[in-house]
Image 1 (cartoon, rainbow, N blue to C red):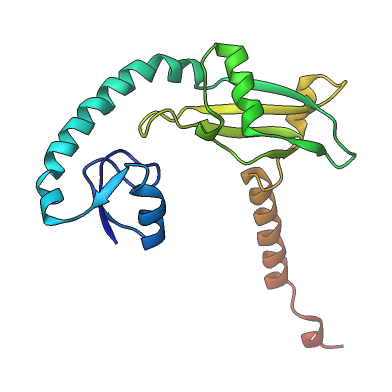
Image 2 (cartoon, one colour):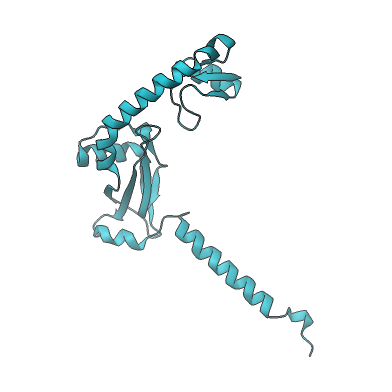
Length: 191
């Protein structure tokens, strides 16, 4: 199904763009919510007007939310939590909890659906982003530490699946490959 976007849609496109989407996505989400219309010849004639109007609105909205983005960029949120010996949390830090903490820290009201992060289930330092507009996406640091310990203790923890863990594993794998290339296999060694 080809649709003409009436509004900016996250991870799909900007207003005025013509996109090919799955029938169900278009019929059940985009069209009923007024985010798009079918890309008919009549609608295509209005595409440039929609694009220019949306650009003006986007500029105005970016100016309004620019100060909020500046306050959020680089913000460090600290969460004490109960955790097991392995650093896994009993429960999780959800986007709703992050939104409440942002409101307490900065006074800016952010909807939990604007926070692009999975629930945090381990101690350590995690990243989260807030989608204010399609252009303004400030990054936050979420520090989760064990209850009763200082917040700095979380810096020693690494989040499962973080790039640091991946880089360490990749380096170890490369070292093993180099050692295998240097040492001949045991069956080729002559006695």
